[in-house]
Image 1 (cartoon, rainbow, N blue to C red):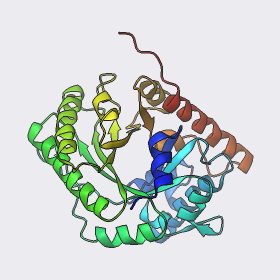
Image 2: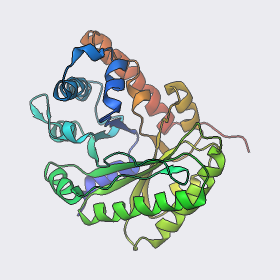
Image 3: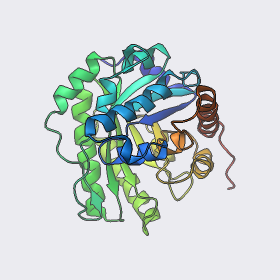
Image 4: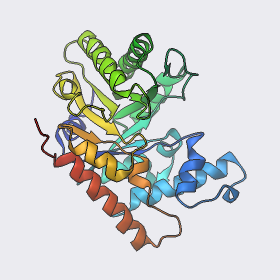
Length: 301
C-alpha cells in the first residue's frame, strides 16, 4: 500500500522533482561539471564517494526543502548512503521531500530506432530494500531516437511491464521513455509515443496509476491527454539537453507538467563554492524551475 500522504504530495503539490540519479558512465561527466577533474579519483569507489559528497551537500542545503522540491530521484548508492547523519531517504523525508530510486541498469544497443532497458533480475530485491528505507517510488529510463512504431511500441510495453512489477512491490513507478530532443523525427516520435502510452494506460487495471517522465514535446500541449488521464498520477519532464532557461520556457508552455530536471538543476554548482555561494546558486535554480512548474505561460490558440 502506497503512503497516501506521499501520494497526495506528489499528485497535487506545487513544485518539482529533483533528479539526483546520475550513475555509471554519467558520473564522471557530472563530477566534471561540478568542477572535479578526473584526476581527483583513481578508483570507482573514490568516484562514487565524490558524487555522494555532492549530493549530500545538495540534500542538506537549507534551500533544498519540501516547499518547492516535491521529490528527489536517487541512485542506488545514494539511497544506501547518509546525509547529515541520517540515511538519505530519511533525510529527504524529514524535509518533506518524497524519495524515489532509479532502478534501471542502463540501455541496450539501439534497435528499431530505440534503446530498451537492460534486464533487471534483482529488481524485486531492490524494491523490497527501497521500500524498507521509506522510498515511495522508482524511475526507469529507455530512449527513443527515431519515429519507429515497432520500436516505440516495444519500449512502451517493456516500461509498463516493469511498472506493473514495481506496483506489485508496493512502489510508484515513474515510467521514462525519453525521446531524444535531437532526433530528426522528434515530433513524429512524440506522437507515436503518446499513442502507445495511451494503449498501455488503457490496459492497466482500474484503480492503478503510474507516473510518466517524458521529454518536453515538440508540439506544445501534445501530452495533455496524459496529464488528464485518470491512471496517471503525475506527468514530469526531463530537460533532455536543453539549458535550464530553454527547458523552463518549454515547460511553462505545457500545462499540468512539472519538472524532473538533473543537469538543468545542478549545472551552475561548483565544488570550490563557499556554502553561501552554493546555497545561493542552488536556490536560484530551484526558484526558476519551480516557477516554470507552477506558473504556466499562456499559449496562443
